Image 1 (cartoon, rainbow, N blue to C red):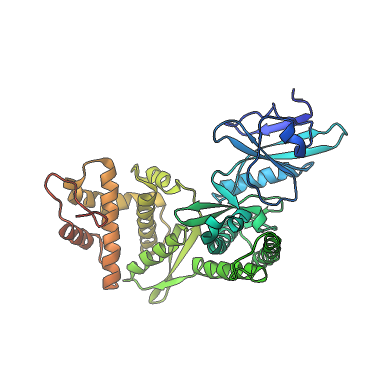
Image 2 (tube, rainbow, N blue to C red):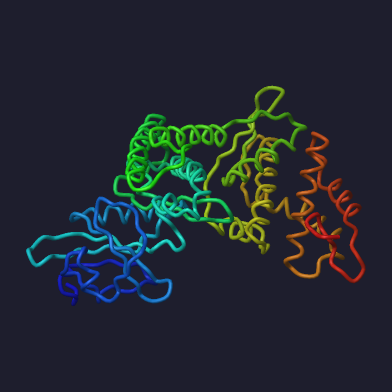
Length: 413
């Protein structure tokens, strides 16, 4: 039993307030007049009552009231969604409270997603009109990521998503996981069902917003869900496409990896499957967290690099693992491929780049510039030119200057 009136039990993850000072014995809708912690923020539509509370600075939390038992279920679903590195709000905890009339309710606690907007703001704020078209891609991308990770949403709608601007793009984050089901993989039937629900829901969302603001002519409510579905199907096909490559066409592996990286997907595994005189390239595509690559590279090699640099180097290690496994006709551990990469690629390159390396950060950046140069040369030659040729070309094209760090392809020299 807790000491807070009305609060029967509460579970909160470490690193957050205990929330014991909130008026748990008061209906959530009445919190704005019952606690100084209540704050007003822009919000989307919700079937359930939601209030926001502040604990100073950026420590803002959303509290959602649900029938008894449902907050615990959604909390568990959100934790698993976070564990699969998918874009969603952060689950913080859940509580069970009793009202003075004896009614028991459960409440879900989540961290407020800073700098995010509900879809209504994107349509009602004239300054955000340019993001309305990108909303289609954001929704399609979120659904693909969830489905690849085995998440059946069951209630995809614009109202259940928050959008965050990022360098001119728009990212979509799952907010409501009440109906979510998490599996190892989804069947085509489950994906189709999710898409059907999405089409119905987003059409209704747009009809609702059209009652209070004029929509651009290009965004017709009856077509909106179908547009998201078309983009979803195109992205799903690209992410899951198999590529057949010849034994001398390693440059096409780089091409495929870069194309998927540009779509926002990371490559966890590359396999080469024998198909007669040619090999079939099979990639397992996953969505990774923001710092996944640099942590993974450090675990495998001990190297310290920025996230984008680490992603390029891990792609090389995975490609080498695929080649070695195919050549030896057995799977080899990623750790073994990382060791070979260090001794056969990284260290020889560093010996040649040594005079230009002034700091530890320079080593990774210069190596990645060589990788970029290698990719361009291979594209031009339509064959893999190899690391030695790339180093020769890079050092010739971007000679170091005495007393200064060498300028790479992104420099001004």
